[in-house]
Image (tube, rainbow, N blue to C red; front, top):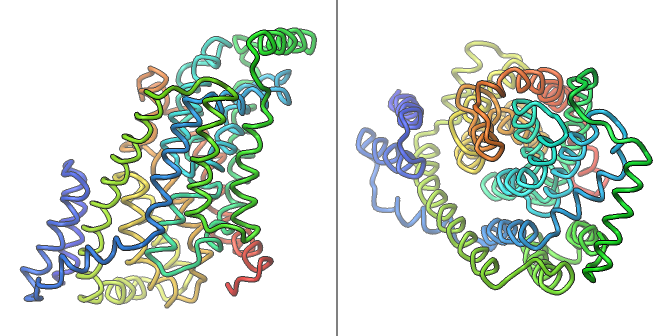
Length: 438
């Protein structure tokens, strides 16, 4: 039972605010101390866990996201999307959501997506009469789409920790990500459709705005959105076409973003470039530290046979595989509420993947379930780390965001999660089509 005490200790330490990496380390040391297990190989197992080129993918995508934001690429993406829904009440909110999906196809990160698109769209939404609470809730939920549209940092970590194909995991989240994008857009439309303070542009006004923007761009000698839109095509095309690995494609995104930001959109400076490198270095250090400590903890959990013990507890409640799946989902939502997406994925994957496989579910199907669950947890009060992040970007108190957030959870997140769980084909159809045995 010591292993369950260790799990309880882990949760308590996280809830009281102990840093995640230190929490992982302290829990691993507790298991060593109470089980009599030798600690000699603990540090070496943590170090070996980081010796994978896949880890490089994440800081490279973070760097690309920073360069896109500072180099004017993110703004070009949002301007392009706005052309299609500008005359619809709530259209600007839909622009924010779709822009997050497009940006997520390059950055692979929820935080990077929220930071970039949020900084661009929050002022526009405020100026056009959107209530601040709605703006914050909309950007929080839309930003999470960054982890559900491939390439996804979450799926890179899941595939690496769970011994699965990175490309198959990418494909698994594609349809749920698109469903969530659609449902968030529809929820936004229905929330503001009768709000007369939300501005709606006429077709003539939009044509005037676009003509003025085009004239201003020509006067400045700036390019249109073509180079920005080409970026996700190059990245995703190179990955799914088998030309590059995800790590190589991440490097390509950085190499592409630098000259586009410097010479085409002329928004990038050497100071910003330096800051992007510093941010990527900090992110890399954080991820490596988390990886080392979670590898130690995972080794102890596996040594103590925690997945099998948890499965025995779950089957004592119900032998129905779907009942076990529901309980696993509740656990993941809770993890998402108290931890960031990277930490939750690193912790949940080695514990839950063996349970899922023993229960008869596909680990690739579970990849999509995990992504949606952790995304939902990240915007679910009371902890909701991405909800607080969005509140800081928008400048709004979280209590004003609670009601619209519950609308997004009820009409977008929960339906997406239910469909992802109970309609496995949504997740495994694309991987099977691409030849993966799932």
